[in-house]
Amino acid sequence: MHTITRAAAAILTSMVVAGCTVGPNYQRPPAGAPDAFRGQTGDQASAAPASSLGDERWWQVFQDEALQGLIRAALDNNYSVRMAAARILEAQAQLGITRADQFPAVSAGVDVLGERPSVALGYPAENIGALEVQASVAWQLDFWGQFRRATEAARAQLVASEWGRRAVVTTLIGEVASAYFGLRALDLELEISRRTLASRQESLQLTQVREQGGATSLLDVRQAEQLVYGATAEIVTLEREIEQQENFISVLLGSNPAAVVRGRALTEQPHPPDVPAGLPSMLLERRPDIQQAELQLVAANAQIGVARSAYFPQIALTGSGGFESTALTALFTGPSAIWTVALGATQPIFTAGRLKSNVNLARAQTEHAVVQYQKTIQTAFTEVSDALIAHQRVRESREKQEALVSVLQDRLRLAYVRYRGGVDTQLDALDADRDLFQAQLDLAQIRLQELLSVVQLYKALGGGWQ
Image 1 (spheres, rainbow, N blue to C red):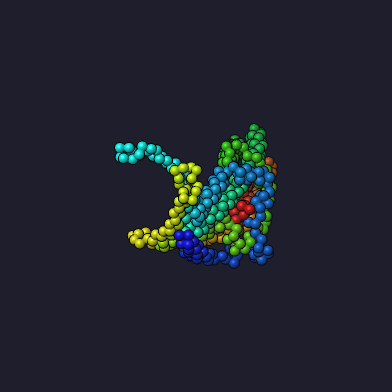
Image 2: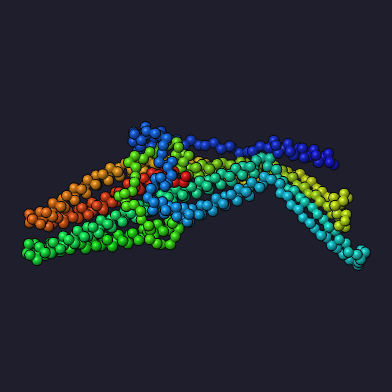
């Protein structure tokens, strides 16, 4: 008997060692990365092409200390980040559950038996007791690699969830920075509106004095009052938008609505004139969403092997052993020993196409993951190109708008000089005032768009999670 047992064990060991893993091994599909990003200038493409804004740490890109504090608070308390961390814990637990299928399951138990037979049936009137101690082992051999492929898929999902968390972090940093710059733009517009209101109130007083002296008409007074009331209404609107923007930032920080600490003014925010994008091929390794999509493809590819393994026999080894005796003193003696060993194999014969459909399903899901992976890459290249173009064009627009504001300021000065000297009517001065006010507000928005283009480019290049 012992010889047979040793032979069976040797056969099983050789089967496990020689076991194969069915299903295709993963191969990365072609990505089709371009040689350079569209929107990259010649100087950017030729000078230090390996360097990229995406390699910088977020506190090096966003140097406003108040903004840095907001980002740190968001990373600690934002609900999306906390949910992403919980998904990682779920994937870790799932990996542990799946990996456990590769190993034997061992259990032990103790049974205390008592019985008193019926005297009416002719049995002696005595109590019968027995004590049994046993252990059992059940092991489904992973001869075809079913459990190894399932573990491969679970491990890929775990790493994908980690990259998913990094993608959430990158998005959150971009959202906080964009919201903060938006808030500082509203602050600048409010400052411009208050300064304009003060200037228009002075002009109104001048017009009222001239009207009282008969130098102008009541119509000029009403026109000056119209500008004052317009600036007042703009201030009220901006104050409302500022408070709502602060509430939005509070939500990103995972806190209740509250005031937001300010740092540098919008015009004092540093933004590099030339932003390196780096090599397009490096984007595949840096973008968290691309890494996550590829790992989900790895998991889907492994599931093909799991589905295909169902075609083959499922081999299981079970055994149990222990001691059984009616007397505790004789429980662990040789004659009390009991054991059983069993080797079984189950081969599916007719499943009405279920196995084939499962394989086809796994292949279709893998093909879907391939397309999703390639689409994610294409989207990434497009986002980088859009951000590069926006950064260049908005900077040019800001320079031209600054020149326009300078011209309108001089026009307004000359218009009021002519009006006070009685050479021209007040209408030209009022038109110049309105044009300057709108141009200053437009300049504030262009400055905001320039900063947002840096944020957009940093996010598109996969920066922020490091």
